[in-house]
Image (cartoon, rainbow, N blue to C red; front, side, top):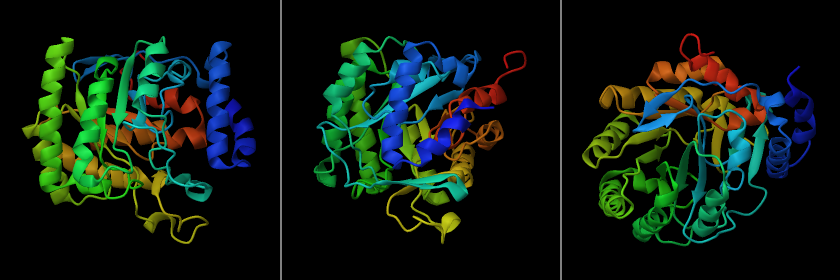
Length: 343
């Protein structure tokens, strides 16, 4: 029996955010004792090169689970091919009032309105510096809630400068529904201005550090095809290296009538699988054939991971699926995507 299946009823009896913190602590302890592999299984070695980086396998951890980069070594022991931490903001902020995370177990889903709660970019950098793991590490950046949307570029540039020397790649998160007006940055002149500023600063930092760190843009599933096509054009224009599709959805169509379905925030888990895949398919139709797409949203099985790749994803990321299926999901998905002889 999956060991996580024994622990899940206890965890699900707790407040979701309390269970989250308890689980991270347990993962840290299990990793220190060398016991995490008993739960997660043997890591899958299926190397692939994307964005000029060598990934151990195609399955990564999505941002949001480890906002401050405080658990990188333990999470790496679960067999991920890459890890993304954050979202981090220039200054520490508490996020939105609690309660702010809700389970919808009937649909294997979560709603969260965390609001970029984090200890600030300096704390994240210090945690990352202490980590021993040397695999592919993405650092996800955002803006402070108190920063006016008109000054959002300043926050992203401040974070980029601070994390640049410590990241394998940097993700620009403009798609969380839990920071007021943030999704306005996904469209038109606002996105054009942001990406132009990031590209220019990245060029300066590359000269300073002697290496070019890839940039990825994380977008929402609630975009129509025209909006996706417009974003794709800007990605190419500004030399952005990858797109992450997608963040959580504000739609409640798939969970209407369920307890907590009316809570504000972003919906993740099984109901987001197809909305995310739709965006991935449109991106793949619009972007060059070899352009990297990182697919995230609704992966709860190896079959779901394969569906992401079939839609056009190059790599995949997990988060909510881990809440419902546990650490063994990492290896299950990695094996499902691995080449012959590597499973």
